[in-house]
Length: 116
Image (tube, rainbow, N blue to C red):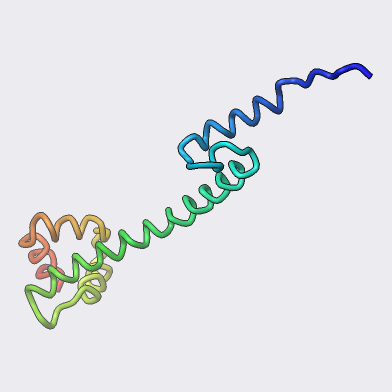
């Protein structure tokens, strides 16, 4: 039987997979099967952690706003501030409010006094 020379398509596919796993350690960057497994696992983790990152940042913003609001008045809290913002239909999201709370506390106090 004559020898069959394989094409380049499978090799090209494997080298493309290897390029995406070049930063992995050990066999995870050398063996094709483990490269594929690790790549799938990395993509799953990235997808999961994107949602987790949004959640963590929202928690951070809420904590910052609450801390600054409670400094001014004991009876006033984050939930009352957000409720009053919704009643007045002020379109300030939590990210912007947290930045205002850090950079300019007096401005946040003015906003909270105006909407009370």
